[in-house]
Length: 397
Image 1 (cartoon, rainbow, N blue to C red):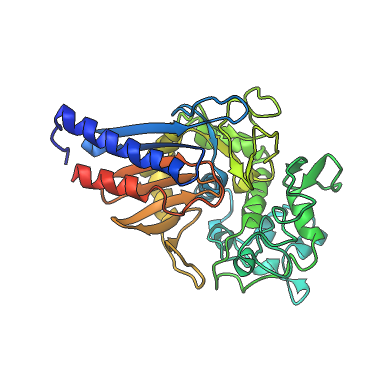
Image 2: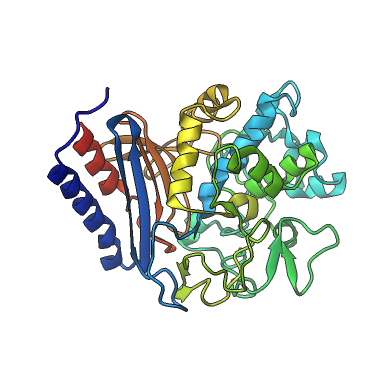
């Protein structure tokens, strides 16, 4: 039901409250923050930005500043896979097809991608397992062959982010280099295969949750194999253009003209460094988290999906939000779908995705609220955006 129009001073009051809540992230250590919230049925929309967007120029943050979404991108990678399944391109089993059936890698590589007791184990892994983080794959970004990041409380020493030789973020990264790494370019799957014990499965497929960027890099490679087009072309043609996301692109692959410091994207802050102002290279994210966007575009994507304005989305959304709760799912997460999570917050439950750089994309379905934003900071509080959503839910009741 459409809510009655609010007095002008009431609308101004809620705007001021939300502005203050977002600006509070600066007091918590963020250098910048941006967010947009829409509640279409209530006729409500708000956006705000605060802080310094770029350390190298001192430019103020605005709602128009693009930001790196990190793992929020996984929702789009998953959507591409589910779209292909819906079209029949993955065969009669769809997302329940086994990864090995698609010949993404030569047999000798596929046999090494996942092992159990040193023996090949990929044959039992389905696309659904990979989409729901129940495949058993370790996360090459933060795990190594002996420990996971959960066990160490930080990126493991042999992971991409934890390894002193790779975390300087100066080399360019590709998902897979068939001819091997070079001094100028590294391959994510090459690195994964080069680390002792990295391919040893953490669980039988489908039995336990373990978050894995590795699986989503492999899924993006599958999209390329099945369609014969690049991952970024699929992203553009199947999602970004149909949703009218004009300020969104896959970083380092489909960029507008950008210099080495990636102007005018807003800085990501990690390890005490403004990553983009410092010229760091974040291209390892790719299919696991390479989207650059704005808060406005990210809300537009959510609404297109939720309001069934993408081809097949009336069938696809129920599949991606068919929540399961595998062993090992913890924290604020109460369910895992296909590239999406259900999480709890003080006002109820949300569905969406978060990213390591503080990015958030969440829908409060019961109240019809859509949220997108970032604090551009590694290790940001998991629920930094919850007070904003809760206040809007209270306002439109």
